[in-house]
Each structure stands twice: as structure tokens, then as C-alpha cells.
Image (cartoon, rainbow, N blue to C red; front, top):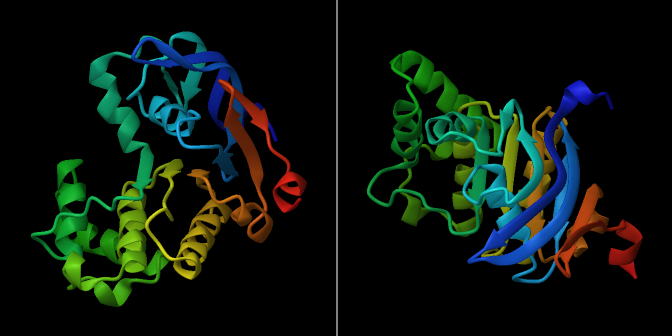
Length: 231
């Protein structure tokens, strides 16, 4: 792949939390449309690495670039612009409980500057169709299953056509079959040209849905072979 397709570029990066080094000497390059797993135990640095990608954790050392944003010394006023280019999916769905699916999604679009009602409606229909939830726009979050809620969260992440989706343990609160379907949806999104980075403790996904994988452990990020997951 050519360098122009790189959307995440980390070179010799060090990340800390509460003055303790979590990861050091991180070298990572992710291309447009690539699916990448981050595996490792709880506390190994997966979430810290992903949070650094949307400027929630600072870069202590090294050089880090996400899309056209240099994260080293990124000005605070630029952070919202970065985050509009990065869709985020978490295991705790964080849907607004007091409004239906449509108004959850409309809220995000209006908050990020959309004003044309027709364009808003069309975009909501597009993302709901992508995740197979077009007929659920009138439902309240509590009326949806966990898997359905996670599909809505993925739809929400897609609203502003991000170049990158960051999914932090998106199947953590789901049963195995539902989790498998969610991973399938994320792979389909990657095939459409959006880079997807997914943190997971379930290495079984690597053999079911093969893709590039890295392991967080012992304060380093290292390539993780699918063969290792199967052994």
C-alpha cells in the first residue's frame, strides 16, 4: 500500500497514564480500509492506545499522526475537528435513553453542524441501512436487544463519514453469536474503505474474521499472528 493511504502513523510513541508508562516504542501504520485487531489482557494498554488516537491521552514521546492531524502538541481547538473524522464504538452503548433511535442520530448530526432536515433524514436512513436497522428508527433504546443497540452505536459512528472507526471491546456485553455478527458488520465497513481498529480480548475472532493483529503486553505493541490465536 502507498503512503498516501496511511490514516494512522505512530513512530516510537510512548503513552502514560498517571505518570506510569503504559506503552513505549509503539510503531504502527494503518491504511485506509484496513481492519486491525488490538489484543491483550485488561490493563495492557489497548484502550490507552485507542484513546490517544482521538487525543484523549497525550503523546509523551515519539511522533503520532491521525489523518492530517499531528497529535504531538495538538491544539485544543483542533480536537473536535479530529473527533469528527473518527467514529467511536464502545461496549457501553451510551445511547440517549430519553429519545428514539432517529432522534439519537439526529442529535449527533445537529451537534456537528448539520442543518438541512432532508439531508439529515437521508443520512440517517443510509447509516441504518448499512447496519441492517432501517426499520428500527422509531424504537427507544430499551426496546432494543444488546446487539441491536450496538448496531445503532455503529450507525452513529458512521454518521459523519469518518475515515476511521475505533471500536473498543464492542462485543464485551454481547452473547457470542451476537458478537460475531457485530464483528462481521465492522469488517463489511472496512471493506467499504473505512479503517477499523478493534480492541478485543476474544482472540477467537481472529480465526473467524482474519485481519492484521497486534498484541499489547509488557508495555509494547507487537505483531500477533492468527496462527498463534489458533494454537
